[in-house]
Image (tube, rainbow, N blue to C red; front, top):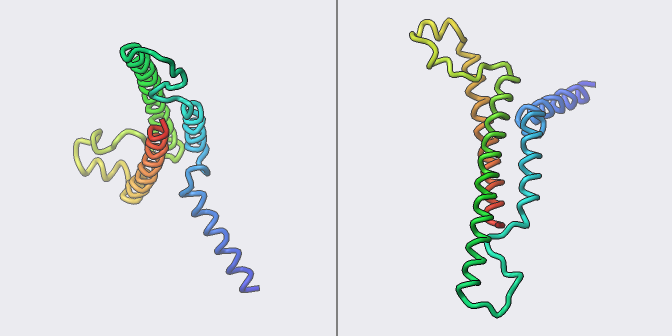
Length: 153
């Protein structure tokens, strides 16, 4: 019975740790990652150059068509970047609010350290700092996904 109890406790501790630290366990970050992956799947076919039409073009016309393709792809990537940036910001903001923290920085709002200590405890600040470091890891993951997309393009 003792052995079964220890296994059950370890299982619950591991499950809670995974739920706490896995981005897909957080519903807000989960939706954002899936949306980011969907955008990537849409853009995997996009290329900076178009070599499907290889005719006996003069060099000038070939370069002109390649520059047009490049500009179209660049504009598409800029639009995607601004859209993803907004979605990531909104996801982090909502995740902080969902966790029970205030998204605004208390240090900037408090005029004195005494008021800061009265407004939020050290433990709450440490928990918020820990959660923000997890969000930083989430943003690094999103950045790596986007860099992978750019390498494919």
